[in-house]
Amino acid sequence: QVQLIESGGGLVQTGDSLRLSCAASGRTSSIDSMTWFRQNSRKERYVVASLNWTSATVYYSESVKGRFIISGDGAKKTVDLQMNRLEPYDTSVYYCRARVAANTYVWGQGTQVTVSS
Image (cartoon, rainbow, N blue to C red; front, side, top):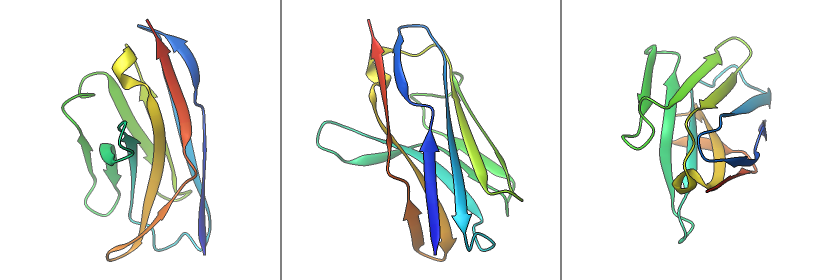
């Protein structure tokens, strides 16, 4: 079994920075990518940034490109999300997700990020 633990959320002001971290534990050897999501008011989750160690690629949604940076350790199966120039619309619960096999994913519990204006 794989478990994900997220940390780093909190309350900040517009323009501030925040760093989220996600660490996998358990049977992590099959993890080939980890992704950060956030959810909207209808609790639909959508991708913020993704890191794939197999293809050595990263992906950013347009709304965070140039402000957020995803990084990680493929051996330790950890992924961080450095969030810069935060805006109130970045307020959300952020979730980490790991792909452990084809079409098989594990989610973290989520961490709240609140950006005040």
